[in-house]
Image (cartoon, rainbow, N blue to C red; front, side):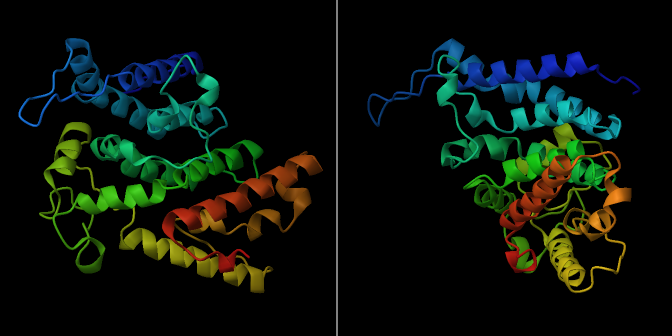
Length: 296
């Protein structure tokens, strides 16, 4: 498919997702009169609960997946990125009449959002992996690109969010999880629960290979990135090729020669780039439980 949405099209989709969250989050809580009776649900509330999983989930996922794969490697990707971040943060859109009191990005993500994260987990795990692949090709000396990576790191390290993501992924397996077995990149591995099986079957291509968000492969890359940072601090004159998340953490090659790395950027812009990348390192360390000693 060669279709690529325009910038205005993406802005409208993001606005639609915001109003979708407001609409779905306005559902009235179920009231049970007694332990022996069933909850009475209004038809409109029933529709709100089924709107996303039954009608829109696959369309939204395919739209974002297509955008992540095909969007040009320039600063305009932020439009698609913010659309993704809008969908995966429903807690920010609860009361359209009181927008000023919406969830702030320093507040803890409440456990009440656990079912949403579980039922839409590929939006968090597979889409995050897709973002990583794009980030490897970004020019981190660009202020816009540095900010894009910082935005994702900040959202995924919100208080309570990493723990919730770990718990959801743990529940996606019948047993073992990290201690005894890994998925090994197979979408039909027997340790997957029905929840994730259904999501993969409904949303992904037949050749899709699931990569654990907190599995051994990612752990190895994170620890390799930490070692790369320590080596960079000790021997800043040496450059080496990195893979995986090392591209995020190894900033030495970008800042050794300011005249070549930054071009016409002002001192203020250079400081912003460095600040964004340093905070990105901190946020990803929080997300994946990596010690900050290498950064400090």
